[in-house]
Image 1 (cartoon, rainbow, N blue to C red):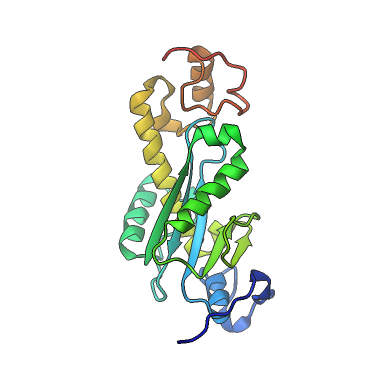
Image 2 (cartoon, one colour):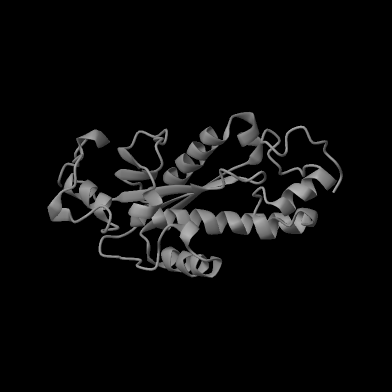
Length: 228
């Protein structure tokens, strides 16, 4: 059995390797760097829901088998809701492993949104079976896990694995917020998913925060809780 390298992410090549293609054109460029370093099971990780005033933050981790392209998948923010749902189904049926982490509004209020997002990412990675040997993370903060990883700014735009994770996290969270709409219909969570739209802020001023609002967020803090 080949011994997997035990090396930190900094030991990966720091500059583009022409033999692997272009990091701006090849959606598997960074996966290729990790494979060249000796890693086979590479996960992409992203989250959805840092900005909203209500609901959880959700993260997803995805391992795409080598040779699987998922060509219709890209940054979830650049896809229509219908395209995301179709891609979500495709991802579920074709990836090697998928994990999801959900961290509540209470945790966000107790700590902060960054810590909550990283905890959701940690949960998503630990839910993977098999476990990854290397992790590509969207953003600039490493996940608190003892696994080699590389953070990529705008990773959901340059890594297919992270793009797939962004789609899964977004669709999963949107479904949660549509469920919350059934519980608290006056806020129209099914429309804005908890983001601070004019419509949402108007409802907050009229009804006060619901049990799932993030009480420490601007736009919510200071409002009296009222019955809905």
